[in-house]
Length: 185
Image 1 (cartoon, one colour):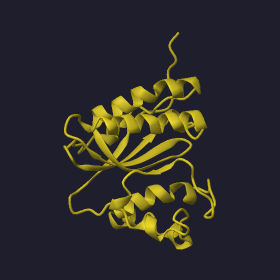
Image 2 (spheres, one colour):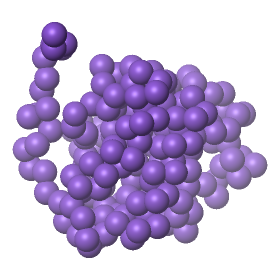
Image 3 (cartoon, rainbow, N blue to C red):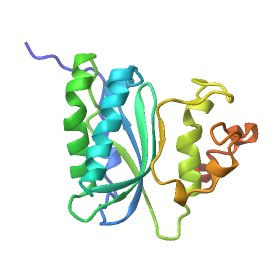
Image 4 (cartoon, helix red, strand yellow):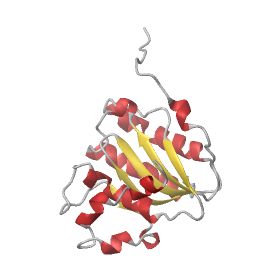
């Protein structure tokens, strides 16, 4: 007997305007199926980071920064020239599927992407990704979120302003999603 989800799927909402361009920058959000928590378990989070590292090592992407939340992942990356964005995400989901399955998790069928235009600054996106666990109350301002990775520190200014090179400034809590408001999100 097949299991049928009663949750309506609206993945078609994510496709209008999707365009995969070589060497373009993308802000991504990839969620678990039904937004189930569990990605921050050590073995799963390690597997997710390892899969990104492998894709970056193959030069399919340049990862700028990333964080793993309990039920989703945020990544800011620059696409390589060999694969489309959909192929990169498909490869990453395939490489992480076993770890999720062992924990009873799945990936949402689609993902959210925001392509940054050449004139768009990436600083606000990186800061948003960095601040996401703090804003969600998963970690205190004087603690380090273990699943944050800054892969390209040279492209951001905000890390140099962190207290002790690790901890965010308290005033950042209210500012980290200003870029969304500026764009009418």
